Image (cartoon, rainbow, N blue to C red; front, side, top):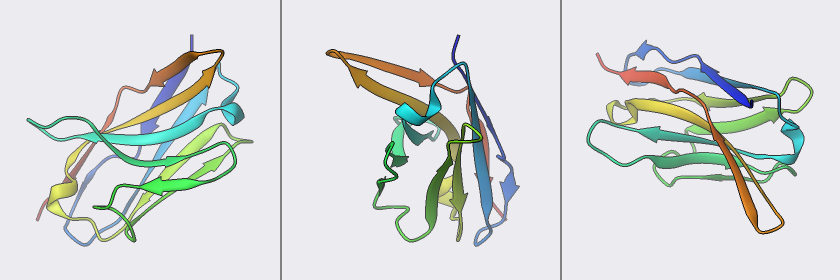
Length: 119
């Protein structure tokens, strides 16, 4: 079945940077919109950033100007570069692949990677 494997989560000080990666397998990666979501303790999962098949991106207001999403279709990988990290960025970050076809939605999730921003 489809596999999405995130990596790159870590403990980082406020103001620091991290780059998350999500490697996809058993999927035609290029036809999926890829997204990064996060879920902090006691909060709902929220969209952080997404990138379409044509490279169009969108970001949550809280991360605009600090985070950058990118994709490498040759490597079946999506990235999230996170700069100027804040304690409120602390969460489990999840990778998502989604496409819609014939009235159906096909959506897959990774297992998540922990990002902790703390001094």
